[in-house]
Length: 179
Image 1 (cartoon, rainbow, N blue to C red):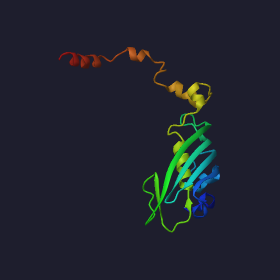
Image 2: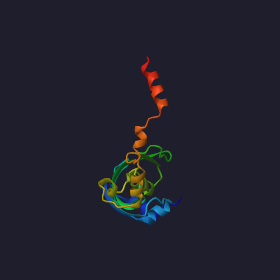
Image 3: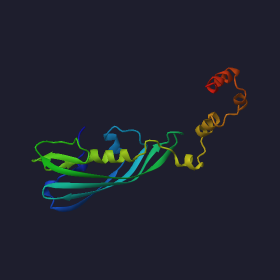
Image 4: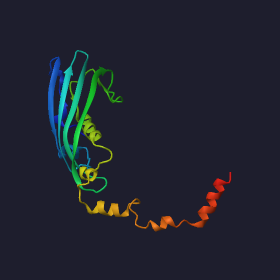
């Protein structure tokens, strides 16, 4: 996967201290990663890069919303996104990104690409189980919800079947009581 130029930060020309970067993330960003779970996205990334003499500290903050489909009803809704990520960049002999909180760049590097960290921050800020807010508070009117309610075990209209217990089960229960 190629790096997007907009997310590459040339840190060699930056002075020591704090530097602010802002990114507006939309569907085009996720198309680059071939991630198609989102209908649309409107996320703002605030990146604070603090350059020190031997290392850099990056603090990512994501805020906004992504439009996803509900796992229960498949109805689209806006899921709020609010997340943060802290990353330390140090310099060493060779590139190493095995540790999720630490990135080691070779000594000759002069820029860093942050697109993968932004992608992971947003995707990991989306809950694993996506439930439409209308499902939780009961305001969503959906055919799928009506069918789920109809087929629900708790809402079974054939309660008479539960009252009629097969006599074979009574004999098995007697075995438990004969200890």
